[in-house]
Amino acid sequence: MSGKVFFVFAVVLGVVDLLVPLLLLASIGSFLASFLFWCVLTAAMIVFAAVATRTWRDQ
Picture 1 (cartoon, rainbow, N blue to C red):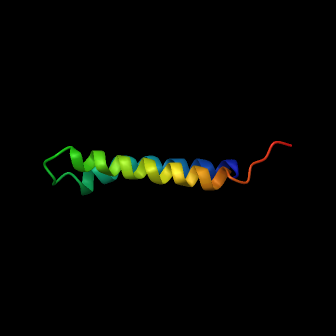
Picture 2: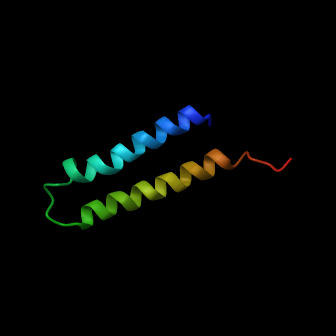
C-alpha cells in the first residue's frame, strides 16, 4: 500500500473509530455497545493486516 493510500485509510479509520460510538451508539445507555464496536473493528483490522501482508517475503 502506498504512503498516501495508507494515510487516507488511517484518517478514515480514525474518524470512524470516534464518530460511530459518539453519534450512532450514543443512544445506547451502556458502554458495552462501544466496546463491542471497537472489538469488531480491531478484529477486522487484524484480518485486513494479515491479508495485506501475506505476500510480503524476505528478499
